[in-house]
Image (cartoon, rainbow, N blue to C red; front, side, top):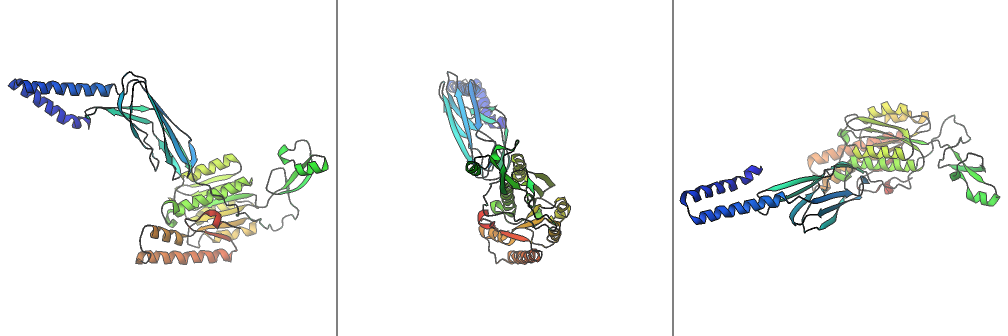
Length: 418
């Protein structure tokens, strides 16, 4: 490519040299000398354009959430006695909104720093390549490139929405003990106090009772019947609707992240099963490490699965133990996946369904694209989804399954209530 760009210059130079020596005209020799001077000077300018140049960049974070801002700080320093007339600085990346490049000039022994800000609009794993610096001559005859630093990987987690009015209801366990089960773990159920015993953690001290009685009192916790949560996230390609941030895939990820965050904040153990390109199981666990695992999983998933939700439920529900709660996140407008849920209540397992309204998702996509919902093919699909969703609601009501309908473009805190 560079040779093709220089081909006209080589051709003109060759013609001038041949013409000058053939005719002996002084003017032609003048043009030859001028061409040699311009080309030679351009070469020297380009060759020294990156000499004695120090450069670097730094990002403010390698892990972020959708809605955060990536700030990249660039610094270029010219330690030479000659100015740098033209430098093009650019950071190639796979970010949906690329990092902006900049063309600058640097005087003798001068330094330039600036900050590039990019909003992180989409979850995922993204690559930021090493810094690329390019320079050249004013005529475009030559150019020089340099690579600075190392590439890095940026993980953008889904936005975590607060759902303060959503909670898991306790499961009514047939044949269970009527008295609560004490546990040494810290749970949301602090039901009584007792005198301090050696080995009790200081964060269990109940200070108001301690001040009132004059003796150290500690809190006692009961083990909740819905202590653990198992999330089933349906990512089968066939049932997904919508596009962009309001697609059923993105809404499913937001719901899963919000429920997991709420459960982990209550010291519950959380497990996740996703039906993406591969069925992935995260075993039940609690704490910051499990939160990190769940966020990493949700940052990478996509609606490209081929396994129907009913198969994932048939394979996964036997893993649930008595007292757990299953939370199903799906846009599937078909009743086949509902029947396996009927086996949970007799086993003392709670169940909730987050139904991602496929009718609303498709309608929202059609309207946002400026199409008419009265078009025959669109109207037929909408009718089919509406009838399928109605059948799902009837089936879930028959088995007395608690259901939340989650439409697109609505904050989860307004939908997940109760």
